[in-house]
Figure 1 (tube, rainbow, N blue to C red):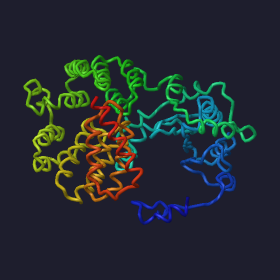
Figure 2 (figure 1 turned 120 degrees about the vertical axis):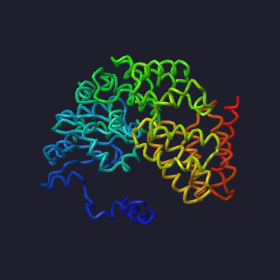
Figure 3 (figure 1 turned 180 degrees about the horizontal axis):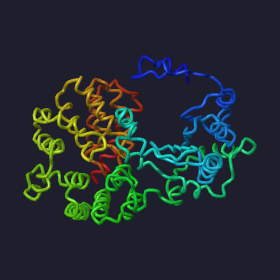
Figure 4 (figure 1 turned 135 degrees about the vertical axis):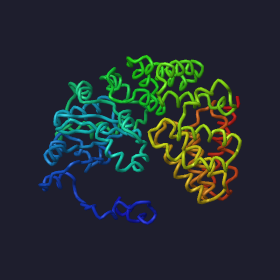
Length: 456
């Protein structure tokens, strides 16, 4: 792994091994901690598969106890786990082992993986994250974390939930390492599973009436990530009628019940006219009517201030293919920061005129913008297509084909005909020699099948 990192160092945006703050030690992790007297603010444990030699003993009570001894008073152990390696029983064992050793344990779901945080001090990443986001917004944006509410949306179990979830489970120890014994068989079975419902059954920390975060924004994040059932629980826990109506409206729209969603959102906005999240959802829902200057949208649009008003003007310019006019709005659109309700809409508009310009440098900028969209959504077929178009325009056909593979994997059969057709059209426009011929033929066949299924 170290040799591979050094071999591609020149091709990477940042070379981690080139950072002068890095001290690289090639040795067994437990051995290093046993021989060290240092205290660490954080120990991040992301070993290999739990069944492999040299990694299996990094999931046990003995290792967690050693890590606790080497942490500073407010230090944190961050333990990674791939859901594909565990079932509910094994995950209970892992959480039980952590709660046996540490006073505070919380579980987050990040990019499909589980991140278990353990400390002797209370853990409040949603609060403490404000400073981190301010210090490195771009780095966190690449992970889909644009505001503290994104951290909250990733929270699966808090301290109480972790203990309820793992109550009675056997511990994982050096002498009886059940993760090592069972995790390979679970991984090899390759049965699609979701551990999220099992985890949340212990008590969803977000489905409470006294949330510290903007509930509408939180529901929007959950909807965007495809967690509609959890979003419903969070929405129904709201005591404020405006918040409840807005949250349920977002869910209705996501389920395709647009008229019902519109009524709920309009009701919410009448109760709370200053809700930016509710107004943004209505704007998005009524985009075609806004572009057509439907009189019924005048009041909705009239209360917008800059820079949000630039999104509406951008939609109009894009519909008219007024690329110069859209370019003129770019500075205002760029002011809509991560976490704002219309942030993703602003990014798509900024990509749009860059692709229309036909300039490779602008296309490269479009790629960077598209990369900000992808981490915050569960099924971003349209945004992946934008990235593929940007890569093609930037003169990177192989990368464009790689993105088209991802597009094909995200399209649901019988839907998204426009995306399937556009992806197929883009593939056919790329140079014939790009991509492995057999794989390219498979991709073309898949896109044609999706296009025909959608047409039916």
